[in-house]
Image 1 (cartoon, one colour):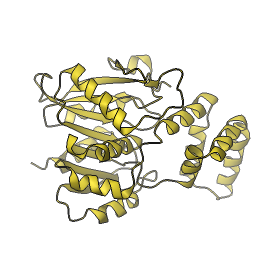
Image 2: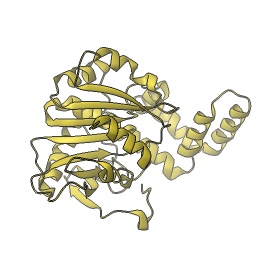
Image 3: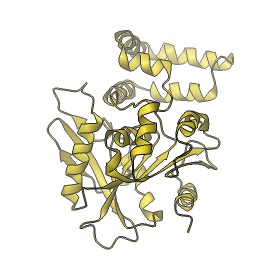
Length: 293
């Protein structure tokens, strides 16, 4: 599904791996004179957003990098083979494709940096766990994947969840009317109501949610695996939460922070933001925390 108007799209490229096609765009940082032999900074955006969201990071990043923003599965033209629509992408396969994209762009493939926002943060966590030694710098912004909701687990991983989701799809107008009533009665929060209205807006969006959630079902490492990977990596890991984030609150990171509190290569930070962290002023705050000099 496309989330950017044609005049807002970057110069996108496609890597066709046979089982998966991934769409991406590149942007050199201001410090990068040539991409040949440079380090790639892979960037993963949030759910139901375009890859272009991550490109402005290149404008504030102080190290010479080639930023490669990847469209997540079922966003834009990042799609599985036509006869395997429900196929998940594994962290191992995703890393293989990223390495091939790196070769295609002429960057180093022995080490990468990465930055993931929201569900893109969950993808980044999965890649970190898959190959801790591969990453020299990992930045996680309001990362999903640290707390799994009962509804998500039921929907994505069970036959009952499949039945319920498609029942919701068939009766979406009635469901949305009920969410309006529940909001008026004070039984659900404004955030949950807005979440439902956005993700149930039309059949295309409902199928986007289904396919998008299903495609990432192998990308959900346990807290134990995440903590172990953070300890094993020789890179620097920085985890950011927004002080006012109602979608992924800072409390989601407390358990991991407790598990790795003695590791000097892992830092946890609060930003003066809600869930929307991709404004230039917030990105500048983030960069100042990572690169204090």
